[in-house]
Every structure is written in C-alpha cells, then in structure tokens.
Length: 87
Image 1 (cartoon, one colour):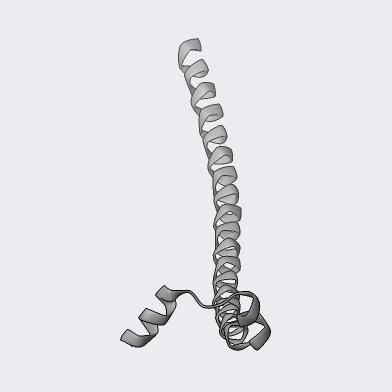
Image 2 (cartoon, helix red, strand yellow):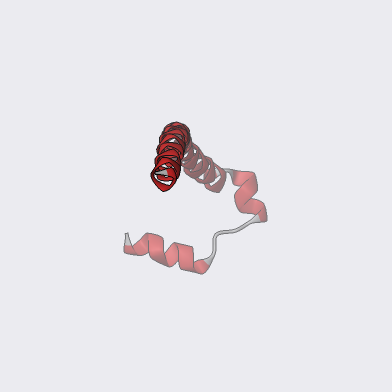
C-alpha cells in the first residue's frame, strides 16, 4: 500500500512540474515569436531605407561624373569611353 502511495505522489509531482514547464515554455515561445516579428519588421524597414539610399548614391555618382571639376581631377578612363560607345 505504501508503494502505491509513493507512486501516486511521484506522478502528482511529475504532472504538476510538467504543467509548470509547459506554461513556461509557452511564455518563452511567445516572447521569441514576438522578438522574431520585431526583427523581421526592422529588417524590412532597413531594406526600404537601403533601396532609397542606393538610389541616392547612384544619383550622386551621376551628378559627380557630370561635374566639370570632378572630370578635371578624375578624367574618364578609356574603358568607360568604349563602353559608352557600345551603348
């Protein structure tokens, strides 16, 4: 009889600890999903800003290449002239 009583106590403690661990796991999983979603949104915003800054850099490069002072100090290379003729 005492063995059955010890087994019941063991299974009761095991069940309670399993429920507590499951609740803790769900809470941790909730915060991990929330953090993952925030990281995804941040990366999407960074990609949008990167695309707009990329367009700005290309526009700045074109404006610099057209500038007279820039061409005076950095004359266009021959390869650049040949590729422009092909286009």
